[in-house]
Length: 273
Length: 266
Image: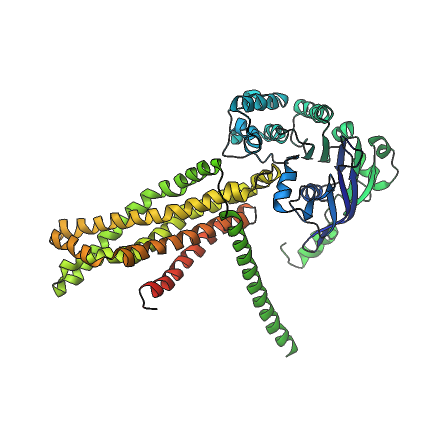
């Protein structure tokens, strides 16, 4: 294993319509570590994962994965590169026409020539790791949101990828499966020497497993460091987020007129909305 | 005055923008068709294709055959009342067969196919997109164009011409039921006039070419609308409507062009 970073994001710009989402993001994500990308809702964390996975193309800048520029690869080369990645979607994104077992078996069936009994064993082991071996015959429609995400995790690691991208893995998990999931992500990372990227705003869980953190807001990286250095960071934007304070430089309210004007000023002018 | 001119210019600009958007969308659809329909299927591709043939073809069989039966019966009934005035009811078989083979079977089967299978294809692929199944397939390293889109395209290409043939056969039988069994046209002349006037290449062949063209257009529109839609519930409903509207218009418009080329002496 080399010491070169696994993912390098250089001066990344991305916008949707007139709305700038990223304005010059730089990140390096080291091999074998759990790197967390955190930030308030709507800062484009999921968009960043899609840029890393090559599903979106940036306006400027580049993303290098293991030295390869993701957005300059041919379609075929991109799909080859993606075999080395797993991604856990926020919704799970299980294939609705396949049951739990076949969902996890899917990557193995399409990318390997393994015999059926071996695929069965591998799938059951992956499902065992997420605690859903008994749910193998259920269809995705019969799973709760949290269970669907755990099946999706089993599917994401089915091919033993080198990189896993987690999109909000902790949302909607009950406290028991949350604890298991946190341990699982950490354990997977150590046992398989994976590189993990977690996008999340669950601070406690993320701080507990991340080796390195990036905090993004307003389209830029506002802070980065180990969990300990961020915890003591004095930047008001950082401490507001890390400590979950309602008042600070990041507003809770979406930009609007003052409440007073909206309620009293407009109503007298006869506007309905 | 100046504001009027500005207003007019902004209208022209919007028209131009719409034209550019339409052209861009057509270009995307073309690239989409080329990327998904071309290529050799894997061993698994065949089984995926067969499953789609079942969904778009076999399950459309009932509606297509029943419609064919009724259209053949109505044709015979209408044709008889006109032909009998000229003492030409013996030509009923010829009239029913030519109308069905040249026009009605390809067109009506394609319209029914757009409503029954096309809308289902759009909604299915659209929902897969909205629930990120297509994205997650891409991230697993499987191209959804090859795995999801290609089997559906090829299933449509193959299923509609076969459905059209079934439509014609059942329609001719429906004409026989009404013309011969009910209205009393001589059975021998019903079949022999048909046999004498229907040409295999000009009538049956051209009808099948028509239905092949319609199959490509309808399936292409349906699958592309599903793949290209805005992934929300409103987007899915709009795209499903667009599939039926666009493919119906395309079928009727192309039918005129094809008829002019095949039978109009162009």
